[in-house]
Image (tube, rainbow, N blue to C red):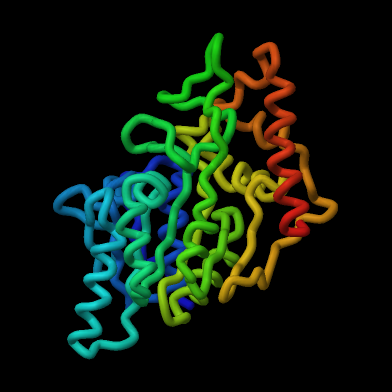
Length: 292
């Protein structure tokens, strides 16, 4: 496991940037011998302002929609050249993964390419102005699902992306959080050592889009896990093999929601308590399903 960062300092990320932390932990798990594919998004924009780069490993920018296809091509090329051992990693945001890039990603996993895909899920399109994505949670206010007189924010639950990837027969799927670096590094390392298409889904709070102090990124991420809204688990060959228990550390979802501006309306609007109860029900369902 690499102990130094392969993502150089001096990039243009915000203070407390979730993408920078997630990319750093991913590279620590993958090691130096890897090629990274990064679709359009915050991570790409803030790490590669021409002619500079923060990547100390080979890196290529793909379009929003084709990171899966580009990673597939690199893997096939390495195989054709007889080069073994080099890991191919794609790192995309939730929009590039769960919305725009889903078709290419599905193809890569269906064909069984030996790649690892890391979704850095900050639950909206942060790079273009905090628009709703398929990862935006129920009740969150975004610029395209604004809370107001006739709306409590996003009316739909998050898309269950790990379940979609599991339906492709991936040998390894795991969720993680940047609040737990050792967990993420270990899961990335494990994913890259397993033959076949593997998937890591990292929950990554965005200080700008979610509306919290830049010093609170890890604290907010940890609270999501402690409420049960973001369960940490591993699935190997279709079976859940490991779950991070929260036990007596369980927190009510109000403590998580109050930390963020995007949920502020739930505490000021008439009927907000009922909406919070619906979010608590989502957490309770996770706790029951995974035995948290």
